[in-house]
Amino acid sequence: MQITIESSDTPLTGLRAYALTITIKSFKGRRGVDVHLFRPQWDPEEEEIYDWNMLIGDPMPGAPGDADSTRRMIMESFTEEERDRIVEFLKEQYSGRLDAITARPMEFPVPLGLPALSDMSEGKDIGFIRFDRIPSYSLDIPLSGLYDLARHEPLVDQDD
Image (cartoon, rainbow, N blue to C red; front, side, top):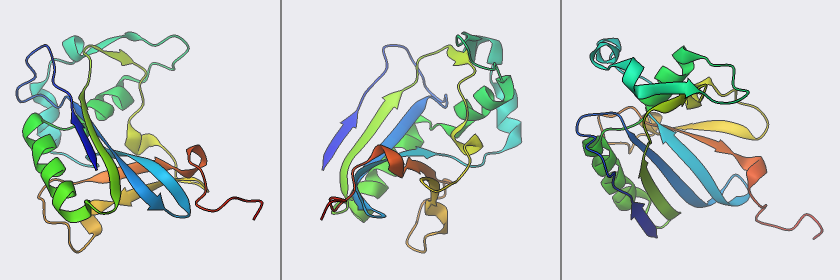
């Protein structure tokens, strides 16, 4: 399993600033499925400690500019300490099932209009993994993952 943890050039101590992605070897009939991890819930009082004018920048071209969704996207990310705990948990619990764990710092200010992962709608190919509902999940950090099966090859060729 490949583990990539990128660090930031700027201090991000205590800030929800890290995105995590895992690549599952095989999942729901697909291979190499990328799952974008996020926190589905948080203490609403935590939102009050951030200077949103510094964290959210200009709108993305053509984006609807939903500030609430962009704020949720930042709140869904992880602190450095949470990132490290989640990576350790994934290494111990799922090492044989994962191809990769990737952690990257977000770049600030985040463009206005980036949507929260929790705002995505489940459908035929898009869904959520709710890790904190799995009996073996031992962390006190709420954890979910978003996947899109349409972006990944089937395990078996359709022509067979």
